[in-house]
Image (cartoon, rainbow, N blue to C red; front, side, top):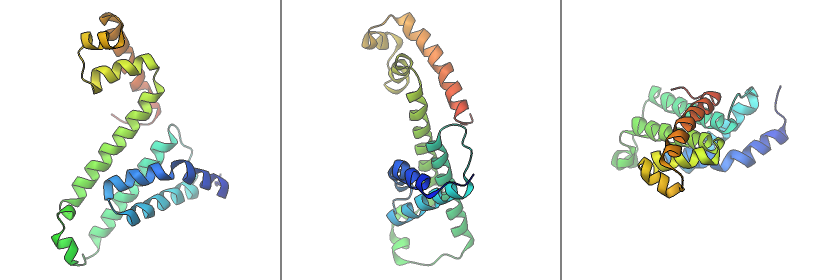
Length: 172
């Protein structure tokens, strides 16, 4: 089923700025970022996918694929020797550095979205243990719960997080 113009406008309005920030953090070129965002929305509009899981993560994966396609396409063409590209250290190691940042950002976005789907109790325990790097006892004091509860919630939170990531289509 093709998407109508109103749906496309809603996609751009709701996800455009976040998608642009995502692409900008990888490319640092505002014009290229805008092109990738427009191409992403265009592909979604043309293909009208049946998304099973997070629509935003689908958009990020599509944008990532477009950036990879653009890079591969540029590698098949002869390079134009521009003086600024020869002297700009930011252009060195572009493919692996940029793709590494893109992958890191995509993983961060997917993890944040998955964490938001957890219950507050499970999320608080995982954030304390894995992001703030508290010990079980420190997390227990911080969250004002027994250490056994911290361990139990961590166990069930990890299981729930795996299920959520599977539902989102994230592969291990």
